[in-house]
Length: 104
Image (cartoon, rainbow, N blue to C red; front, side, top):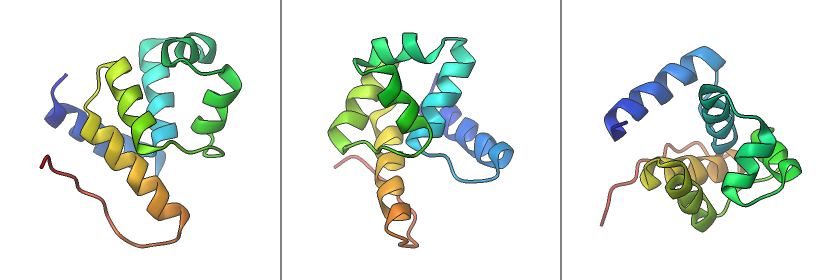
């Protein structure tokens, strides 16, 4: 899937869930779209099912390095996952900025 298509898909998901996408909601959406349970996705990502559950619920957050690694493992754009990762950090700090990354 192209980055443009994924970006459109993320906008659509924002509309459906009523709030901006997060790394957790993106992983959950991926899991549901691929019809896999948390155990299988966690194994693919190299983490525990409990840890994945915490990420999906917004209880745990990812570092940029881990977000990029997850994107590669799932065949997603690193840029998209990094944007979500940094946006999560800003939102958690109650800072009203919108992240938009571009390659250097």
